[in-house]
Length: 174
Image 1 (tube, one colour):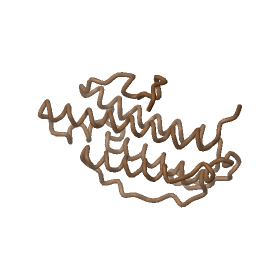
Image 2 (cartoon, rainbow, N blue to C red):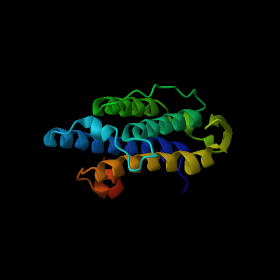
Image 3 (cartoon, one colour):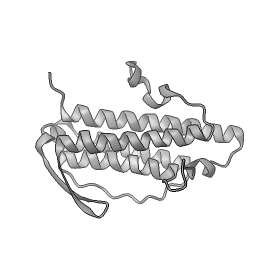
């Protein structure tokens, strides 16, 4: 049995982003309940030399939208990274989900051997489609989603593994 590139990408991206959105929703409610300025959470980081929560969400968004676009052979849109509130981060996640859901299986399936070349961190990167998805996109998406979760958990948000995995991670209907 084989799995399509579409099934291994778009639904996975959407699930990770929806779960991140749910965790941010809990964080906003927690901040309001505890009367903590949300900028404390949005600007929080686990270590002085790492990106804050806002940037973690932006990067997760960028990884998903670029992953979908490149696998489909489409242009990667450039979005400004100006979000500084939970509402703005939620809007970015929603925009990303809408963007990636705009691609069809016909656009992405068969991209396993697609030659992908792009600049990353100031240098030329080269991947085949399958390696790009499995070795770059998914690990990066999960890294930044996990870091978002960890920052909030570290700052007192009561979330657990089920919040990170969501219903799909437990075989429940989504």
